[in-house]
Image 1 (cartoon, one colour):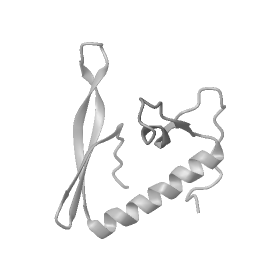
Image 2: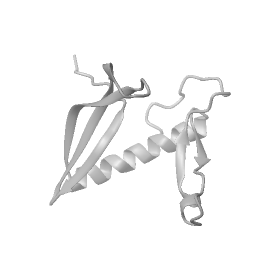
Image 3: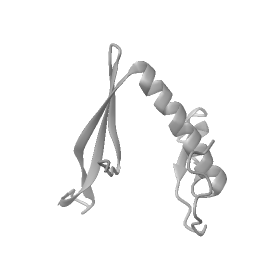
Image 4: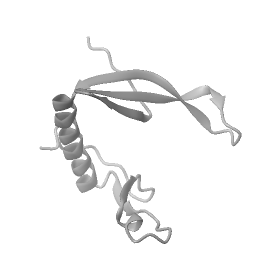
Length: 109
């Protein structure tokens, strides 16, 4: 049996020489901010060589592209704040009006 880890996201990526550290966070069930939003709490750190990190990013980009093509998520334009460059940045958002379907591809290849 393999250990599995759930994460709500990445809080920080640190590069030091030829080592990349990726800090994973989870939303705390106990700690909340002033708006009653769960705080992000450090859970675990992934440590990569630069080469392994670059290869991992490539795999994650392929997975993201597969999720976009399957309609599981969609890209949206980030609002501009007067700077013409900031409007070109894209973020990924979960659509609320698209029904979820099972993924047809395990590897998005």
